[in-house]
Length: 126
Image (cartoon, rainbow, N blue to C red; front, side):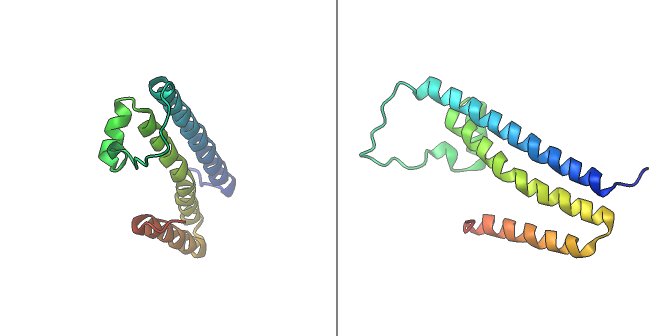
């Protein structure tokens, strides 16, 4: 087995970022088409706040709604994928640092991942 080089890891990370962006944009665009097909003729009433629809409030119902071609759910999944793309970049960078035996950057990458996941779980992301 040949040894991974830094350029190989950087190329893989670039492909992950490009692929994640293209796929997420495509999913959001497709969701927008479904949303406009179903709701493009309706006029929103901005005098009443309706809140988040129930099918967008939990992961299971979100996936189920997307499989039923609800535009808002498909758009939401595309946005989640867009957010997950840089997180995947940090994960691949960590793997690259492990392969290079650069343990200082492995530790820094793990701390970054822990901060990201802690902020996501606590709801204070941003």
